[in-house]
Image 1 (spheres, rainbow, N blue to C red):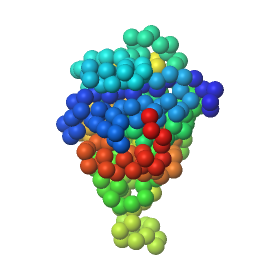
Image 2 (cartoon, rainbow, N blue to C red):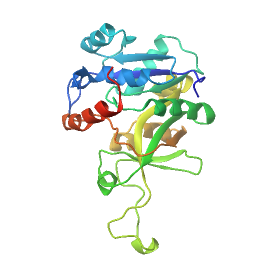
Image 3 (spheres, one colour):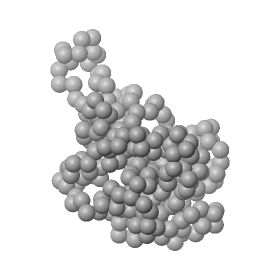
Length: 260
């Protein structure tokens, strides 16, 4: 795996309805974006680039010696922002790119390496992502925690904010408790792309499913793209969507990772 060449691009925008200025928020005294860069640098990636729309984020990264690029403010998604970096740098179509969101400062480096390796191995996949088993009912029911169902080859069948799969009748699951739930998986919002597919992503029209669920990966499935979903062990690591998440992540960063 260490011999696999791939690039990490970290999209980081300043605006956020739930957490404005999130990439620059201090976690244990360091800007969030620098924690995320540190996770990327712990991987086997040959290069790491931050793609931002804000001069303040650009300055923090540049001052820390990070390769950073200004991108269009109007991009509707992180995928579009990553594609601009790939296009402007004239990367070859066979390059493997892993997108690590700027608000994922506790992502284990081996997850990034695994993601790139999975995409390299599964030749008919256009993209790759990860999931982990759901362990409690709160996550199973939480609409902010995205779920995924897969086929026999670990290709995504569907992603949803709803609780999927649903056990229709408890009598079909012998011995199942009334408050139990079927084997189900949380989606981990990391993606690996083949550069050629990424550069064509902007031409795919948004679909109703994507707009209803607010999940851009549904656009890929709707247009016939294949997404491989690898499985990792359950982890406390999660992204930061809201200021309340900060108090949960700071102890994780302090105990599991070195300071950037």
